[in-house]
Length: 61
Image (cartoon, rainbow, N blue to C red):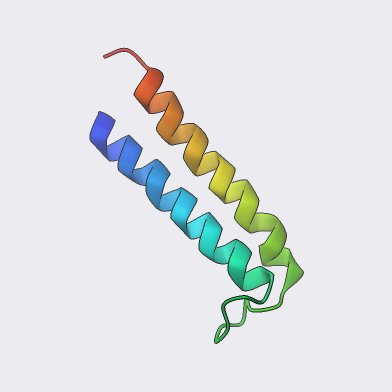
């Protein structure tokens, strides 16, 4: 279960980073591009993913 949660956290962090870049207009070609809503949601998802991965790594088996 531990590797799954670490992978899920990493995937969430990556998704949050992409959403942030799309919201800020650095990645184009999507309805999210240049939309400030995604520039706000992205960092929240990024931090949640990092928190999940770190919490899983620090948790005892």
